[in-house]
Length: 83
Picture 1 (cartoon, one colour):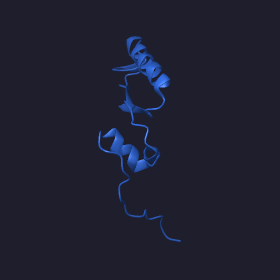
Picture 2: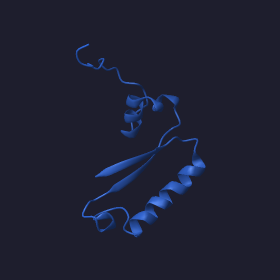
Picture 3: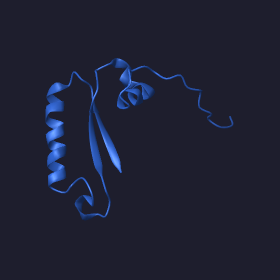
């Protein structure tokens, strides 16, 4: 199981502190295989974005995480069920 921490590029101070904290959590066994002796695997990935405003939109964030140029994807409206 993996989790993502996404930091916008302008948060440089925070980015400098998050990765070392994640690394320390791996060393202490809080993350990684058999995290905290729980039998569960937990990986955390720190992603640094370009700081684009569009990354606040769900599909723009996915594009950024995939390493693509950030742009909102076209998508169909969601069906909300019978009214």
